[in-house]
Length: 329
Image (tube, rainbow, N blue to C red):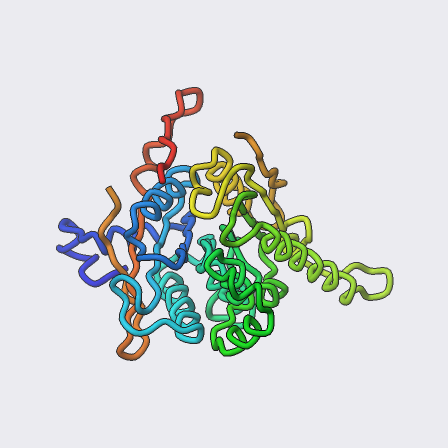
């Protein structure tokens, strides 16, 4: 817990202390949300999305601004943003209970950040392992995302020019490769009418993740004895949900969007031995606490929603469940 959370100051508990206590709960569900390219974490669309996820999935949602975005200092680059993402996880781990479930949510540009971070969490022991990975309008690589954007149409007419220009890009965000190392449950949500990042890219990520898990299963067989594996690494724990009629920026307005995220989180907060089948569906005031993950003189700014009060106000069995308003764009 934060400074001043004990002793006499406890009666005048600060907002920071309140959220430190919330993260420290053994049953905490924490979603680290990496947003898209435009603007900052304070964009109304993202704030409403975070509130809705918090309400539906009973999870704390941590919104992160990349370096150079919003209140974060520095200049964005793949190496720098990836380090920022790891710093955020360390910040959460320092405050969260060891049994806390940490989910990663990547939207559009942020999908590359989330996929790379999820893969790295299996390589760096201090980061722990994610409970699940949620991708919203994800791409194969940032190059593929840029090439499929409507403004890149002239370059698609001249393939050699396209190859030359994109070969100069330092940042790759190669999700199609990184996702092969991710072993936690994965949920991929993509609009069928997405004209910025076509759904074919989401389908390829889904296929790549499933194929890598099948290869791991075959490569670790010892004679006729199956490997000692976790249920999370099962190919069946990679889900693709195509949202009919949805585009790139309006996924959260689709009736199935929040239902799928909530079901996914509620399914995978349990331990592997207790996990229930996840069944995708195709049916039709933010807090002010901030965290600063320091990296030298660089700071990453973020804001978190809280569910502590909401959890304590859950309806008794047999009582009417409160209505949660549908998020607006």
